[in-house]
Amino acid sequence: MCSVEPSVAIRTQISLPMDGCDGPATLITFTGFARQQEHFVLRFGDIHADPAPLVRIHSECITGDLFRSQRCDCGAQLEQAKAMVAAEGGLIVYLRQEGRGIGLYSKIDAYRLQDQGLDTFAANEYLSLPRDGRDFTCAAQMLQALGVRRLRLITNNPEKQRQLADAGLDVVGIVPTGTFQTAYNQRYLDAKAKLARHWLDLEPACRNEEVVAVH
Ligand SMILES: Nc1nc2c(ncn2[C@@H]2O[C@H](COP(=O)(O)OP(=O)(O)OP(=O)(O)O)[C@@H](O)[C@H]2O)c(=O)[nH]1
Ligand SMILES: [Zn+2]
Image (cartoon, rainbow, N blue to C red; front, side, top):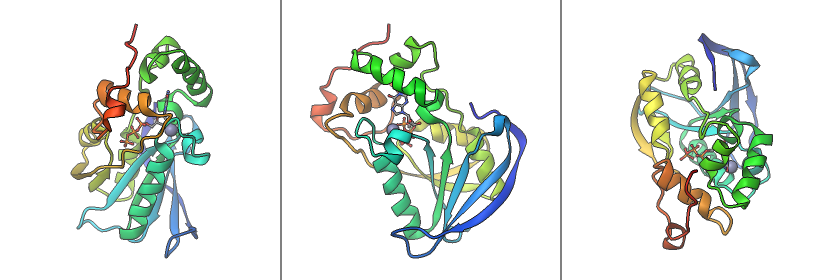
């Protein structure tokens, strides 16, 4: 999905005053991505090798991040991560991989299928799209371009840790992101926990929710 060229490098850095933060953040853009992808990094404070910086790798979710849709947990996770890295310094790597890489329109098609009973992964497959089309290698390359070799990663997703390690980064700690259950995202979170092995601490009401099997 990321389709990176071997030479991802910093393109531009600009200071962004941030609502609710003591100091400005720095927005960093990059060159070297295929297909004009516009992944970026927000840096809060200074980054040092020791202690290893706190990093959130966040996949774009227009509905959740921008409009705080309750169908997923993305908006709450992003807000929490922003508060964490703003408090102690760190990075948000924002990947333009909407809908786990299938794009907004296909995600909305997948939402329709979920309303008809499919789980979030089966819905993608029904559309002949990957269950999870993301590739976190581009995140690793951006971090390497910033001189980051060791990091503490804010995530509940074991796949992110695995891909960063495969790309040569040293994930020295995992900081869990919150489990933000709503009345509307229970089946989604349940599917992530059961079918994608995310480390989620779900309330019993959520665990008991039925996830429709993939056909
Ligand atoms: N295709 C599809 N994508 C979704 C759906 N709900 C959320 N997403 C996308 O999923 C991505 C977020 O992935 P998640 O699996 O929720 O979380 P994660 O970032 O991998 O894991 P954490 O680091 O623990 O938050 C974003 O790109 C969302 O747009 C859905 O029902 N279908
Ligand atoms: Zn979302």
